[in-house]
Image (cartoon, rainbow, N blue to C red; front, side, top):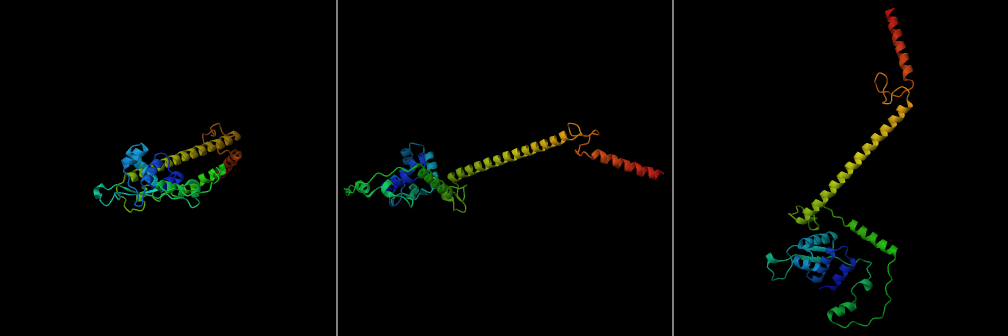
Length: 256
């Protein structure tokens, strides 16, 4: 049992719900050689199914708080075909962590080991963080999560740097998540394109109606008496009359 690992998990883990309980279960078994609790044991701790525990471990790997070595746990006497998975508790304190306020103190460690703690002077209670401090912490956690985006989101954390990943259920779930996100993005793009085309058509219709209302040559449908589309040019009739007169004069001269 590692009291320090459990305390770090309580104060600094970004996991929630079942994933955090599973992380505490792994920290409870953590030792110098890592931890290898069975999936059934972790499921009993969290009071969930084994599938939920497996999904929680995948989430902890994505968060970078646990690493998993398949069939690498157990003792020297454990047969190879019965070896459980080995979990390494990789969550650490941030550089600005004040261990005297929210972590295991030397006195707590002495009590855990059965020794009598040394006397210490009373300290003032730590002030509660202001609202702005909480917002800053939330912003830092968001930035950290953004910085830990996976290079290959279609794979699980364990196979990020594997050239040819083997068949893996976590990778399959990651691929389904990526495919669903891509499908949703394509649907949003199609919707945006359709909205843009509708807006362009509506604008063309509005401008055409303005030209028709201002034109005295065409009907309400924008057509001339001969049925041709109107160009809404006020001098069009006069130009057409001059053109016809010039053509008639030329024909009369040719006949003469």
